[in-house]
Image: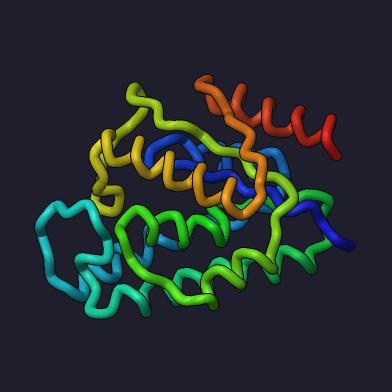
Length: 188
């Protein structure tokens, strides 16, 4: 089976993980975001109690951190391609790595671009920043203004890679999840 691979993306604090959990509750197969655990591990290793916005401030080698993240997302992509499900959802996709590197002004080599270009998702849903639900925590360190800038970086990167991003408007988790599923029914 060749399942449809669906990305749920957006800046931090936009409700992506809540939508992913709702999809799982309704029986859909979902891959969870891996950056939060990586950031927490990097913070612990760096013994930092500062509230910094860039998780790469906690690592010795930002390039290797991003490469590890890219490989983790690629592993999810490959595993998702072989599952026996009609739809497979991803909390962030491979292009997110490049978007964040763009935002933080980090250089990347062709390996990053080629991985993003050759491992394509079928549909991308983008959840825009929503001030009323935005909170920071130990792994989400960006201000709301930074989240807005990251939203634009994500939208720009996906569009540069030829994706049409479908915007998921504000609403309850159930409403947003139903909108995603309804959109997929009409498109697939």
